[in-house]
Each structure stands twice: as structure tokens, then as C-alpha cells.
Length: 258
Image (cartoon, rainbow, N blue to C red):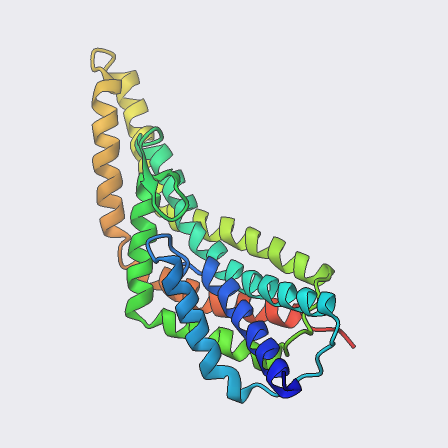
């Protein structure tokens, strides 16, 4: 077999596995509703498109080194996609907090993506965020980021070091902060409702506050969500910019430091 053909095949596989790892975890392309054949086909098509613009690399003839390079590229794609997955997971956290305050703590729905039970409001927020993200062409941003990663992080040069772990930990922190910030307005309104019900229970002992309080908290929570709905445009903007920045930071952290 011609040596140039072997180099081309290995180069294409390295590009393919980074794209494939990226599409496995990203919030839009990684959902379980999308068949694996579609994900593989999309990764193969994108790899074919970006192949000519990626410079050739010096490849080792050792089979183990090639396998290690392929695995390294696959993990690089997963690491980049994981940044987007974390920020979108803040929607589930916000919904969990709101559900707990509204009285929906034991009400969960099945998420087809993870095949697990997720909070009711969390699933609503997540689907709403995905729709708004698609509306502002967020999926174009995800594709452009994985293409740009080949320019910032050449094939076979990804290094997993302490800085990458620190960025992932910071991303976890940002996920929790964003989730609490999203839930805080609605939780504050429900807290004031609980405070008012507590005063009523002390001043009017004959009233069964527990029977009145649960439907009232649900109604107040729904009204609070409607009032705060314009805020989600700001939330989507924060997720859009934050996802792009986190993915670029992770790409830079995988570069070999001079």
C-alpha cells in the first residue's frame, strides 16, 4: 500500500475521532434521539470537509503510537464537548431547586438523553434553552468551534495536565452558580409566600395552611416563572458566550506549555 495513502487514512481517522468525541457529548448533537449512524455520518462528513485545510503531520509507523494518538484525539473531542454539556446541565440544577420549593420535589420525568429521572421544571428549562439556542444558531457555533480546534490544537498534540483539571473544576463551579442564579428569582418569590403563610398560620389558627399553601405555592411559582421569562434571553446569552469561552479555554489547556 502506498505510504501517502496510509498517512492520509490515519490523518482522516484522527480528525474523525475528535469530531466523533465532540458530537457524543454536545447538548444538541449528543442527544439519544439522534441515531448513532447520524452522529457518525455527521462526524465523517465534517472530517471530510476540514481534511484539506489541516496540515499534514509526522506519523509514527508504530501501531501502538497510532492507537494512542487516535484515543487522544477522541478524548480531546469529549473534553471540548463536556464544557458545553456542563453549562447546559445548569438548567436541570435550576429546575431541581425550583421543584423543591414549589412542591414538585417528588415529581420527575424521564429524560430520553440520559435515560434517568430529571426534575419537571428542569426538563422544561432545558428544552426551552435548547430551542432558544437553536434559534440564535448556537449549533453553528458548536460546529465552528470544533473546526477551529484543529487550528488551535494540532492533531496528536493534546496533553492532559493539571490546568485542564482546574478548568473542568471551575466549569463545575460555574454550572452551580448559573443554576442558582436562574432559580433565585422564583425561589425568592416562593420564600415570601411561605413567609406570608407562616404569618397567616399564627394569626388565624383555624385556617389549614397546609391545604391552602401547596396549591398557592405552585400558582405563585408559575406566575413567578412567567414574570421572569424575559430573563431567559439573558441566560441563553450567558450560556452561548460561556460555552464558547469554556471550550476555547479547554482547547488551550490541552496545548503543550513552552
